[in-house]
Length: 321
Ligand code: GTP
Ligand code: MG
Image (cartoon, rainbow, N blue to C red):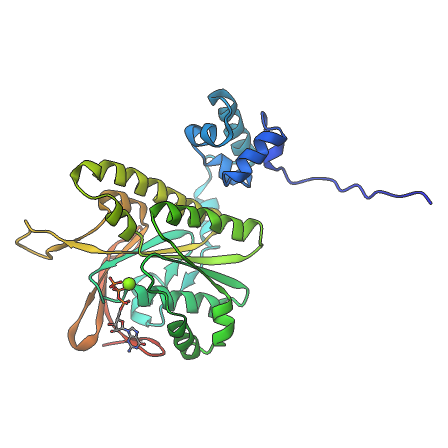
């Protein structure tokens, strides 16, 4: 019997089709986390040289090749609008909070919540995870936990409150404990693997807290520049996955006392300009009267600043008038 071989025409370009990339380079790139054309297209020359060992000239060809294949460059406002139509919003369960955020927490963007201990930052992470899963039965949420404050019991309660099967909710949350800042950064790279290799539809990535390891590891004035550079790389990685895969990235951040501040709020967010600029939306959370929580929108590209009050209950968030 003659064996017939099915010839599958490869229509989709891969990293190996790029100029200057052979099997060995592709393998090196792959193990460094470059698995699709988009990751090469948005890489810097230095990153790519380091990852694959090629010269700058070759790296430039690779990046340009990837960019050409992806039609990156200018686009019309109409095209941008069309892309924005793919953006979805994740509800907090509080109508007021959602309205403040223009309908909920946006996919394709980074939202940062900063505030004192107990202000509700972790609660927001938990409720976003549950509502992401409720709104899309195929979706997954990723929870990168640096302070050991992820609580499956809490997810269970909130899932019940949202009318979602608690076991199903827990099954669709991928939790990882980050032990230091390097590990935290590696875990963000692993999100890519969950999507491209395991085919998981990740809609939300929570990093709770974004800054605690950085703050603990870089102590003293002399280390500030180094910390900020590293944090900057981390933020870049996060915004890359947010826009590449249309993921809602939610990060929490602590505040520190501003000893020289006499007027207004005497606290400020950790991470300075690096975190502030990389976050698309910034929310300041604080405790209000009688156990309530106040969320203040500080920074948003297309929304007015404002403040809302809500309550954290066993089954979820509720508005306060
Ligand atoms: P740090 O991580 O310490 O900086 O604080 P945080 O901003 O993450 O605070 P978190 O989100 O952990 O908020 C804790 C508060 O949420 C508690 O003090 C409670 O008021 C509230 N909370 C947590 N779980 C529940 C719950 O099951 N029911 C109710 N009603 N409130 C809860
Ligand atoms: Mg917390």
